[in-house]
Image: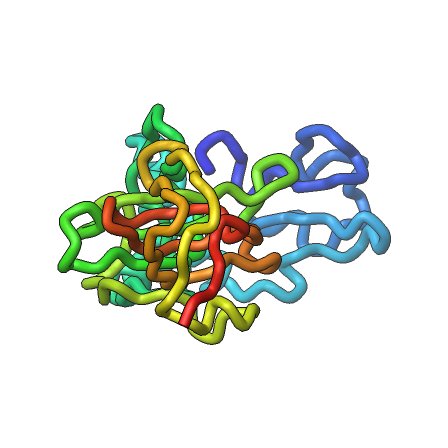
Length: 243
């Protein structure tokens, strides 16, 4: 935005180096003598972006590039997308929605979602305000993969750009029949908790299932619910339907 010689330099993937419009390489480029944004068509060497770019739109583009550069210089990357940010700030956090991360968040314990500013995440569960352990937290997964798999875990509302959240929501119309039954499950095996965000099970104890994972949310084989010990995730294979 600052180093580029706007009005003189030509953007050219064909030439592959920085050259002014007066260079012999651009002898056939249209309007090359004008003080405009020059972008050469690599196939039709006469065509220039100014053939179709209105002056007012060019000025808007230049201002946007300068604003983005200034925002990045002061380590405010989200300011680059101020319009999208304003819309997200007015959007309530709910299951099935997407949220933009505004603050980096990381925890050494398992069960939490590692994110950086600008990450887009899918909300899978919104903690209920009636439960102190869930209040102000959501369970989410990354919308864009890093590597080969989505990542998912708990994240605080404070790290996200969103309006007020509706707590206790879970994904509607789960894909498996057992997930539709929010009652009458019992643990058929002892399961040790994997850490924060998970809950251990004792054979024979009552378990209230609230959500069952699926292939399309990358949490197949896991369920979320409550026991006498608390609420969290546990393997669905450790449950049996009763009543």
